[in-house]
Image (cartoon, rainbow, N blue to C red):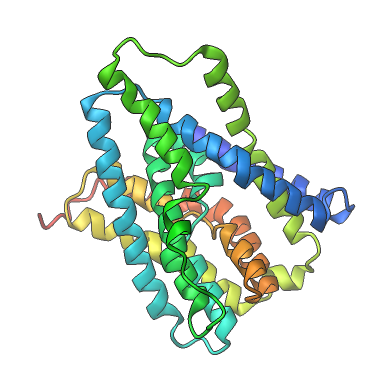
Length: 322
């Protein structure tokens, strides 16, 4: 584990977020530009990031096993977070804000931030493992996520096609297919210009997404960013309580150090930008959603390193019951 590389990555993202905030203030990145950049990221850069993360690891039986285990952990983590979020949000009174808070607690920014951050934290296999969490994210986004937003509304219909065919599952299938080719043709290798092109496009994800999040915060006053008790409640669960739950639970159950630290890290990611996207599409407290995504991202610059440092200490404790 390379904590110094991780810390440098987080600080770099914070600096880019501040640049995005300034660009939003001076209208270089306005609402229209943010939407176009978001479309670029979701349509082109994130699929490239997923493919690049999977094909960056050579095929082997061990890596195939790691991929399967990663998927199991990813689905289990999201389902457990969904239960925690549902219970945590029961008493929130305003219906739409309750939905967005619950949604944001479940879905973290695994794609835009998680893959580069976890790749820097675990240089050997962090991005590879994180890419399978993105697969789980994109499938459950259209089951659990849309189910939360659709609660009590007859105008929103669940769509099986979107569950199976979306901008997360398709590049995941492509990447995994390329990953598996050497199992049949051992000498197979993608041309260097193809892998470099995918890598360069994938590298757009982190800087552009942080610029967008900074620009989303720009129209809001400091009071709106830091003065909302509802957003603090979201950040408390998303950035602290849920990661702590996974950290201590996995340690007590006897899971390996890698999984204790990795799941703590991935569960400490800020609210996904998908929360804002769904809020806009389905007219569900879009302003509150943007505030939750932006503020949780801002706070995560401090909370993520703290959660991961804690996890690195917890794994040293002798508290396993297995």
